Length: 522
Ligand code: XMP
Image (tube, rainbow, N blue to C red; front, top):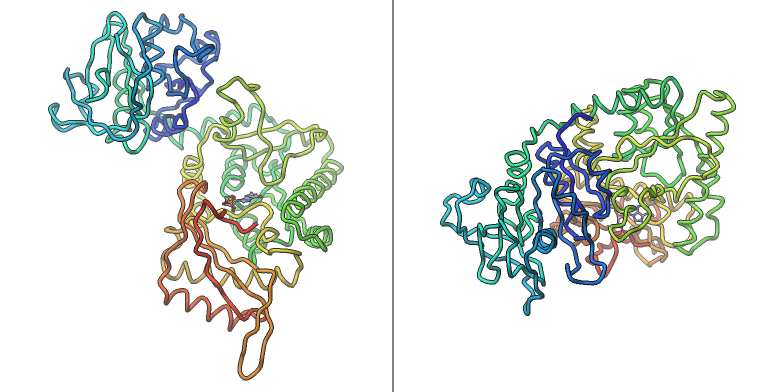
């Protein structure tokens, strides 16, 4: 890859993925690597600039994360953020001390020296710059050659610079949204200070990936587990562009899918896009293994194991037919999975996280793994999908868990319950779309409860099932809040479900946030 690159050395801050995202949003390629990356590897990566991230440690703690001295001799601009700035100061002869008070939250930074890096962050150099601080230690004496460019009430050295060596330090976090114009600040550092041109775009990514995949795979065949979710759909479109029908997509119908999902996938991807798609109907196999099982974790394990068995069997069938023509297995691993598996605290550096949905594929498959999305964040995968022509509806679709309706039917899973839930869920989603609020909601679905309640329909007593509706607003699915539907909307959905879905006589709405609830009910 011939793009200008920025290296972010990871010292363990909870915000460091954000640094990478902010830079990539501005079309500059960057990678996050652990702080202990060797100087040889750094030279080979050949960055145009290096950022030291923040981190939870104190630079004076025993065995605190450090970098080799030679890094300062590489001659590329360096920006230290929080811990990164403290480390630079300590290593180059300044002093850092534990501060009596921790500084956490908004601070106003006042600019002392008019430097070009402030050009776009404030309108007027005498205006305060609102930033986000989160630190305990602080710099008390600057290293030689450094000047103070800005200070805050609590932090005399909020922004520092060594002009001769092109090294900057900021005590606050420009990568978080709370820092006003933080993204612009980082953009200015990578483009104007480091000289990156901003040429890393979805189009260039597609072109380079195709070349890379072709040279890696040659004329051999690739198998991809295709779920219809964004990651696997984007991976499939990219791989198809590279190897055409040498990509074999396997779609497993586990009987736990949404209403008409299998037909929609076949129509969209096989008929319209022309993907080489094999559909495996394994609904009975899944349902018979799930018979009588009520425990949520056991259900998950069974679904994961049956998926692997079914997938394995299908691969065996393909291998029998194709022989040695098949050599590769593609996976939709994305960058956050890769970063998570490379621990900043010294974990093994190359463990590939197994696919969440299927709980890992057997090692004895003897296929080489191809991961075309391994360098991309989720929002980049979506942008790539758009560039590859994937329909917006597929790109912005709410996530659907791997175990599917298996974790949305509380208690034992049966075909009859699946059919009821599918219809109710479809009505709910359909009404959400009609109301034009689908994209305001992070995830919405119906849940089948394991109780029956008494009702009356016409003049007849009923004793039927309860459907719960769940809809949440969320940014990262780690925390979530329930969606405040209009009462009229809820009334309409409830009436439609009770009237149109036989076997349901009551609908309830879940008003729990996460935490303490989770998004799914199981
Ligand atoms: P929870 O219920 O943990 O869900 O708040 C957070 C997000 O993860 C999805 N989820 C799963 N996805 N396999 C998956 O592929 C699973 O076993 C699973 N469990 C939960 C859930 O739908 C939500 O988006």
